[in-house]
Image 1 (cartoon, helix red, strand yellow):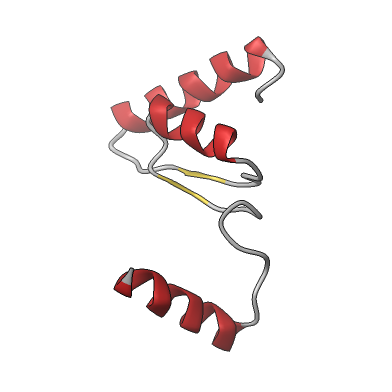
Image 2: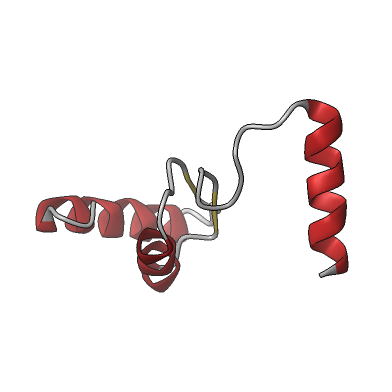
Length: 71
């Protein structure tokens, strides 16, 4: 998305449509702070990807989310 202006336009349109329909959004495949920041600025509600955490087994995922709530 960061290298293709058309991709940004498509993401902006999808986020606008979701907002108009009262839906929240989750972006997948976020691997850099720049992408996370751009998506947040465009109005994306949530994201997942290697930037936030590597794939985790269920018990490790629970520990991860608990540690983030305390932070």
